[in-house]
Length: 239
Image 1 (cartoon, rainbow, N blue to C red):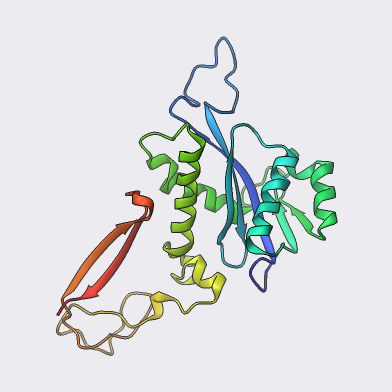
Image 2: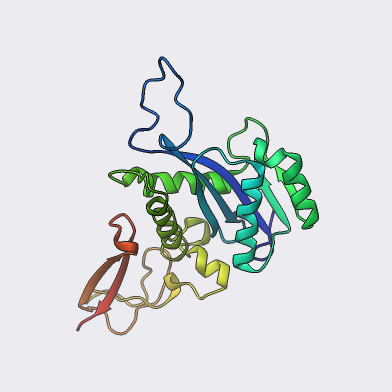
């Protein structure tokens, strides 16, 4: 499946994020259900062309097909468009009659990943892996309050879209691809080494030197939402 423009193809998947009283709790004598307060269910929708997070939300228990379609309706309303195709796994939410009727009414086609084959919905699976490694697993405590956990997801999605470079795009960010912006990694760079030959190649992405080599720089680091695991790094020439 390929996409020629943003919002042509969306990937969607579900995952669980354990809380502080989560999956480590012994199952005997009763099986701990996979639901709040033991974990959150998270749904994510990713644009295929840009890998941009177009929608992310949480549920207290495994969402139904009705829950998923409402989430997708909110996402479509937010972006004022709807995808031509949706790629998902064979979860009961995505194979239910209600989901089928929902997508047919909106003229959306569905592509299902291969059963039991890792990587068949690789785009959204890769995002979920990044979200857990770069966000939820770095939190001292995964919030039990819905509003607080929702802010964590929203802050990560905003940082992922705007600040996180992707090797798949040659260090461009999802927002730069999605909105067709000139990539920051291609703009002229500062060179702090005075004797650096201007025509010499630098590390990828290859860019020209801005001004004269030997720049004295000031490093500024801020954080999205005040979260230390979501840094925004900027350089400014001071001399």
